[in-house]
Image 1: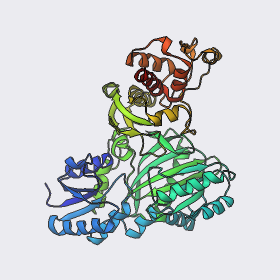
Image 2: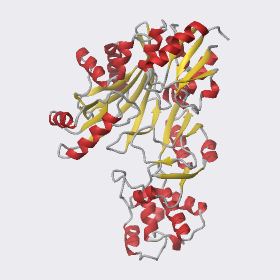
Image 3: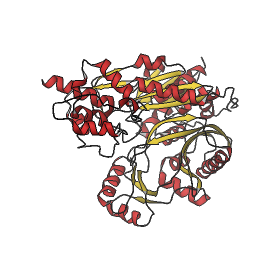
Image 4: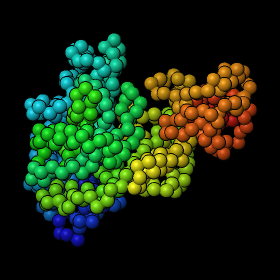
Length: 508
């Protein structure tokens, strides 16, 4: 082992690659997190119970570790705390991104102003703190608009507003965004149409190397829920070149000259490539630590650790060219009774990882941000269609079973909440629609044209397959498939159908 150490901020799943990479490089690894049960604590040499929001406490710990354990770097990946990293590194006299630069990359107001001054394409915006300011900003922008916190990640507090007439929605959105902001600030910006991309880069002595270009798969407006990403991008070289060029200009506008950079990029049909935002860190969302290494053969996190310590990265030339796909599993609201199908998901050919973020007894919601998803499955293969199909098959194998009788599940099924969530299934066959309409309160039966239904749920699970799995999961007959059952099933998918049947069984 080396005689120096590293302090990694965060001990969650997203920090596992950083801890492993630092250990592989021979560093003594200290991790800091407010969560004393964070899953990666056991991988580190020592744990420090510190709230990452407290930059002064982190800086004090870095200074102490510098004196007592020859600290060489402060590092994070997949967190909001790149500015804390910079602050602590500066306090300890270590290499790293300048604190002012890190703040610019952490605050969307400062970031947008830097882009504007440098002529980097990004959305028009207005900073806001109050209802009145938000309404005034909306009057000055073309709709749709997006309201978001200035300093939060994971799409927390981010909402799309489609009409100036929806004043109540605007007010609620700005209040949510301000509440999700550490500085109690938000921005209202123009919505940019078109596909979204995630890009990672390493910057050493001002030279930018692109280390990952993925297509993001965003669903469920007015929120922006990433149901997965696929790397490399499927878009043509001209689009890629334009997106990369704008990303690099954005990195330089912010001032990142030594460190990592993560870009959320858009390609507008009207305006071309535009920067959504750029963070002074590697990406979360399983890209930098999982899908990019599977795709390229490069331990990107390990190379980023070297740069954070003031060293030159090793070779960033890919040794592989695989397709890697990540797909997410979501749940309707309720309390988890059990999670089934994990072994089946892990057994899918080409699947590398299955990550669960919920457990029995936990309360789950239909996500309004990207930290509320229940699972992620990752695949890698040398064929695009095979890789995507494998990740999707793994997600479909998972079944998050909910406790019967839960009031939040009932409200979802009855459409008393989450009215923006599309139904899991929308019938396409007239015979099936007519059959459900004809059912009485107590009569039940199977859809006459189920085998020809083209509808799939949020994860791509077909109706016939879902019904077969439901029947194998609970003792039931076609007579139990009443009108109320079908309403629950169509609204909430297999979760909704099972919850209805089990709730009925309990109430008898």
